[in-house]
Amino acid sequence: MVVLVLFSTWMVEFLVFSFLGLQCDLAKYTINVPDMVSVQEGLCVIIPCDFTYDPNDAIADSPLYGYWYEQGANADSNAAVATNNNQKRIEEYARGRFHLSEEVEHGNCSLIISDARRTDLKKYYFRMEQGPKAKFSYIKAEQNQPFVSVTELENPKIQMPEKLQAGHRVNITCIAPESCSWKRPHVSWEHLSHQVRSGIPAMQPNNPKDHISVFTFTPSVEDNGQELTCQVTYGEGLNPLHINETVRLNIHYPPQKLRISTEVMRSNKSLQNNTDSSQITVEKGDAVVLHCVVEGNPLPNMTWVKTLQPSGTLRLTSGNELRLLNVTTQDAGEYKCVAQNTEGFANTSVRLSLASNDASSQKVVNGVIGGLIVAGVIMLIIAAILVFKKFQRKRKTAIDLESYTKQKTVHNKSPPVFKEPNGIGLNHEEGKDVSEAQEKMEGGTEEIYSEPEEMYYASIIFNAQEAHPGVTSNSPPTEYAEIKKSQCTDFAGN
Ligand SMILES: *[C@@H]1O[C@H](CO)[C@@H](O)[C@H](O)[C@H]1NC(C)=O
Ligand SMILES: *[C@@H]1O[C@H](CO)[C@@H](O)[C@H](O)[C@H]1NC(C)=O
Ligand SMILES: *[C@@H]1O[C@H](CO)[C@@H](O)[C@H](O)[C@H]1NC(C)=O
Ligand SMILES: *[C@@H]1O[C@H](CO)[C@@H](O)[C@H](O)[C@H]1NC(C)=O
Ligand SMILES: *[C@@H]1O[C@H](CO)[C@@H](O)[C@H](O)[C@H]1NC(C)=O
Ligand SMILES: *[C@@H]1O[C@H](CO)[C@@H](O)[C@H](O)[C@H]1NC(C)=O
Ligand SMILES: *[C@@H]1O[C@H](CO)[C@@H](O)[C@H](O)[C@H]1NC(C)=O
Ligand SMILES: *[C@@H]1O[C@H](CO)[C@@H](O)[C@H](O)[C@H]1NC(C)=O
Image 1 (cartoon, helix red, strand yellow):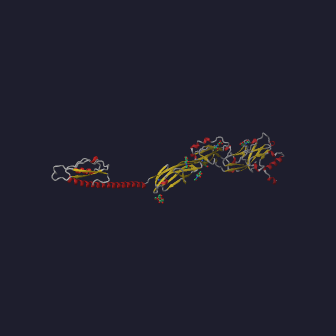
Image 2 (cartoon, rainbow, N blue to C red):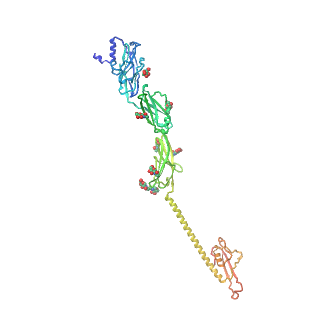
Image 3 (cartoon, rainbow, N blue to C red):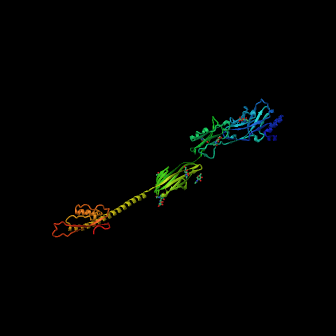
């Protein structure tokens, strides 16, 4: 009997049957069940199962009962976890949660466990009974007793391509932990951006498995950084189970909205900030900070290049900032910021011009004033020279006329008569000085000098005859004039 105790239950049954003298064909009692199933806490699992028995041991119209027990439980004394026998007691913890397939009569011994709990983690075995003799617990081998593994409930998993690109259609998949029809999952998507929300109808309605949902949409730049949530609800009614998973969308797009902001500093004082400039004017010596602002994913790297005249470019620096700390004339020109990332590149430029600053304009003013002064001095000198020359001439003329008037006053008793020697016109002394002087002295003689351009001059010598002492008052005095015409090399007067 000590040996019998060591026998497993099926051996006991076998012995019982044998003892009763019944021939049981044990080979006809088979079961097909996985040796292990896994379920997440709170979810539902079906342990698929089918079994056979020897119909010769049973009467067809007697009821067929199936039972699931915990491993090691006594089929007679212990409660079952699931059965189709209403008379059988059910373990407290299993009530309403463990269910035997309704098709036991057809050899379906599947066990459904819903709202799985940690305490459900154990091995179970199946037993069938149909009168009068078909009573069998399928515990022959360890692998016939499925192990139910209960694990912690996990969030759904979101699968998407490694790289999402703006404007490229994409399938995003949410895989929720599997469950059975008793606690079916309902998957929905949520997104902060309205645009994508409206894309939800693109979600595929007929998924091969209801725990997998595919969300098809075309991401835009605005979706970058937005959150996409896959929300899964298991079961309805009293205590539905909610899980969710959120991903932040990382949408790749080329550099865009490129602009250059500028800050101009003079004598360490910030003068002006411009958030978007294509043109700035600064002064020599100013400090200028050019800042390139760009959007793009991945973050674009930036390079500053200067456009050279007449053609070509000069690479200055990388990084989004370019500092020109002491602007000189050579710094004027076009500065281009080139932004690049894996998706593409873009560029924008700012033109830096130099305004003439205070110091140099002062120089110009000084120059102008200086020039004016110099010109003035020169003019004064010229004027002085002219005046001096005039004075000199006047003096000379005065001397000549003086000598002339002396002679005249000595010999003349009537106005002098001009004789035209050989038809040569007597004319054209430079300046009217002489004639004026004559006019003054002689009182309204006809003008004999006119155009000063023609540099002829004449010298007139009056030869008055010595008057006879006796006839002085009677006879008119006779005068002779000798007129010499010569070129202008000499000043008149011999
Ligand atoms: C067995 O029963 C379970 C639960 O009712 C069911 O899901 C499964 O489809 C059945 N198996 C077969 C082979 O009919
Ligand atoms: C998304 O899934 C559908 C259906 O499986 C397929 O026809 C389509 O090509 C997929 N699109 C992409 C971008 O993978
Ligand atoms: C997602 O689940 C967490 C708990 O895991 C919950 O606090 C949160 O409200 C859920 N979010 C959504 C959008 O359902
Ligand atoms: C500007 O400030 C720096 C330090 O901040 C100093 O070294 C420099 O001398 C200053 N320049 C002028 C012109 O004040
Ligand atoms: C320009 O911006 C800098 C900071 O970026 C600030 O310190 C400075 O005062 C601003 N200057 C002007 C003129 O607004
Ligand atoms: C700026 O450059 C000029 C000419 O090169 C130089 O004379 C001046 O000292 C510089 N100023 C500063 C603050 O570096
Ligand atoms: C900038 O990024 C592009 C693409 O990511 C890369 O090919 C290039 O070498 C980078 N340039 C610099 C200066 O980092
Ligand atoms: C700047 O962009 C224009 C097109 O917008 C392109 O033709 C040019 O080659 C770019 N320049 C550089 C230096 O990348």
